[in-house]
Length: 320
Image (tube, rainbow, N blue to C red):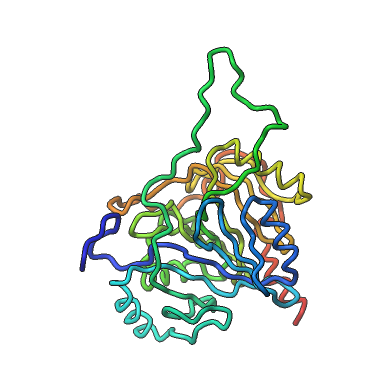
């Protein structure tokens, strides 16, 4: 196996979340929400594609769908030399499927234990190769105030996708799948309630995470910003746009990032995230099983009751 800079030698595993894809009943709502959030939401026929400022990569696609939100599939990136090993793993597990009809049909397709379609395709590593740096701060003369006036605060524009957290009825089963098939590594967990996994070739503390629920679904997407001020200003930005429900500002324990979550029109969340822990490709992260009280946040407001409600499953039941 060829050793590439920034990858763990003799290790096969996905290197990035290339894209997550879901459907919603109203694309106009999707454009309004994600544009207010600071993303570049581009309308393309019957879907909306999400980009971050100054980045050519498409992080997500939202399609026109049924009467409730639905997670359609998740796409992971692999190195070209790892594709055949991934094909063998899929055959060994007997989990291969046809391409999702909303996709371009490329790559390898499989179904995870929760029933969600997964695409593996060769693509650029869009997860970071080192811990991302804060936004540069303006140098100030002694005796000058550091904070700008409120009227001069710039629109917060996330820099990249950090991670995605999914609901799962069996968190530990999903951890085993991610380790055995996708080659991800467990960073931290709290019993069978929540688990966080990182990429073997260098990534944030988690590329994906899973929280226990009655069924599968999308809980939140997390977007990297350059300062804790941007986390707080993003929260104000969304409140000013009429999106009032959420959780934050606070600081997580597992991952260590500062956060603010904004509830979207379909009951899931988009997170502003700053300063998340980074796991280099040549470091063994000290994985641990944490007590519930130590697994969610170091400081911040109390968790709202609606935060772990799987609206995707609830909406699906209402329409069946």
